[in-house]
View 1: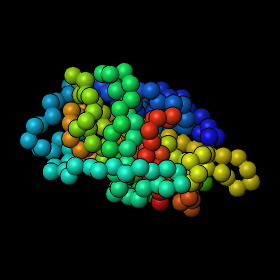
View 2: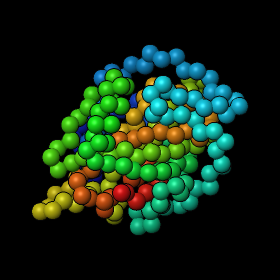
View 3: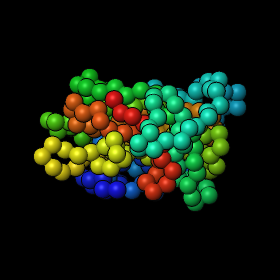
View 4: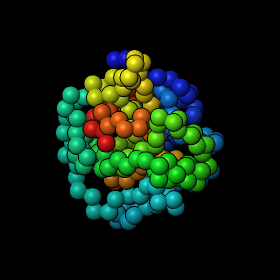
Length: 231
């Protein structure tokens, strides 16, 4: 696979190395970054009766009465559609390894208004907003991840999932006139911790304007990934 372009360091990612989050991230370019890696919020125990949890920002919450996911296999040649469950590897510090979890992408929205939405959400989280280039725009993907089978440490886990933006062949997106482009999708909630259940979240990424021939590859690089057709 042609390696995704590395424009920013791993330390710039919104994906934090806390609890059982994806702390084994590989280097690639990032759309948004936190102002600080410190976490001052005290994790609260997940409710056992399926009550909705919120980060206070509206970014992520626990899905009430979620149906049990039945993941399907996917490849770059046969990606999943929005709403279909796939399987993606998430790193867990409790066991010191990767655990496959069900994940699905519900929708993608993009454009000038989304640029402003991402800016607002990033600043609301205390992060730094990177202005897109003239030929780029931000996109927000809504996703869900099932944590029921994930070994959660005492402090809980973030609902983040590592995700890369690639071309439809699973490699870096080819540009006109040669060259390649790629980025990492960054989860927008880096303060809310969960213990179990299906959690709804948002991830942001930059994409070339007027290009929809891309994939969202969810899961750690070199491990199990679920591929979703972009929009």
